[in-house]
Every structure is written in structure tokens, then in C-alpha cells.
Image (cartoon, rainbow, N blue to C red; front, top):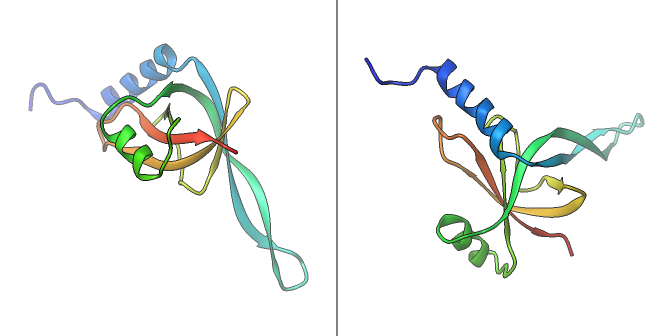
Length: 122
């Protein structure tokens, strides 16, 4: 079918978005349970992903609605590659600023970004 983007086209566009529109950098960490060697489990923090992103204030629409539902007055949006495996329970640092993730907005297969609704950690 003419005019339909291929998977390679979408990957190429996502690469361009990351190159041209992501001026900031992030590190994403997650707590995971690991064996303590004595039959129990302990929490360990692991870096899940790191790379380029875009930090911005939330505007109107879905991001602002989510922030208001969370009771957040000063909320931010962090745009990352759609390939990043991220959960609201993860923690993210953007340009050295520690942020709490309240929600992950993933717009589907053709999306150029995955948006994280965040606030600064208290």
C-alpha cells in the first residue's frame, strides 16, 4: 500500500527525533530483588537506561490532566525514545535533577516519543 511507513522508516524518524529534538540527558534506575545468598531477597538498584531526552514543563492536554490527578502543581514532561523500558515505579535523573515519575504516556506504534509525567523529588 503506497504511503504507508515501513518499520525501517519509523526507526529512521525516531533516530532523527532523538538527534534533533533531545538536548538533555537522562539516567533511569529501577529497584529489583536479588538473592542475598542466604535464602532471602534484598533490593538492588540497577541502571535500566540512559541517553538523550527532552525535559519541558507540562502544557495542556493529557500531561497536564495526569499531573492534576496526581495533585502536582509544578509538573514536567520528559520525552524519551519509545524503545525505553520505563515504569512509574522507576526513578529518573535528567541533567542531574532527580525526578519522580507519575505516569508513562505511550502513544502507540507510530509514536516518535514516550512521555513521562514527572515532578521534582522532594
